[in-house]
Length: 219
Image (cartoon, rainbow, N blue to C red; front, top):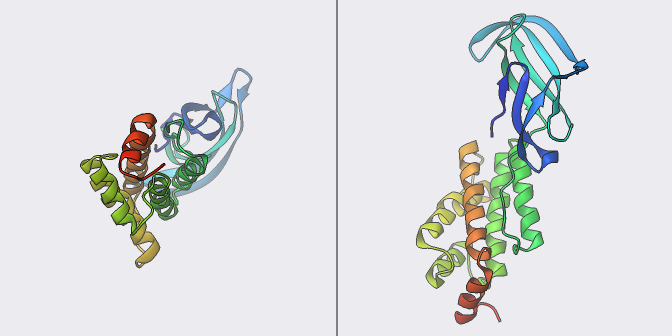
């Protein structure tokens, strides 16, 4: 989620609150937490401003400190340029997902929270392949593993298409092809469908395990 400003306060996820969306306030009953003003006429987002305004903020949930950079003309309204700490709302993952795969998915979220879109893309491809291997799909390419999981019915045909297009192909481009800019929307989609694949395989684990045993994938 892109942080949004409300005056000099910010609404954004908090990493210390598990990625939960939080209000970040610039003051409490004792006063403001602190700020630095830089008087410098300039342009930001195609609009003229008279000063840059750095403000200390605090998460209303846990009290963690944050820092925001605003542009203003001596008062509100102000335009928010960036906010730290960066964070994404963490996805809910099924309890049965192996810890190593959960950690890899969370690291992809961490990369995404820092706008490291290429790193997140590569990690999500890894999440997908390791998840399929953990469920008995060990032979051949990742493309083959996805197709076999769809043929066995443990993921749907529609899900396999998204796994190919939004996770595998994107990750392959990052790892194997010439450098290109990866957009935020591509990674948000990859995170979403990686989460969905994990849900397909681990939400109703007993049923999936029965299907996998029937296909000889696991013992």
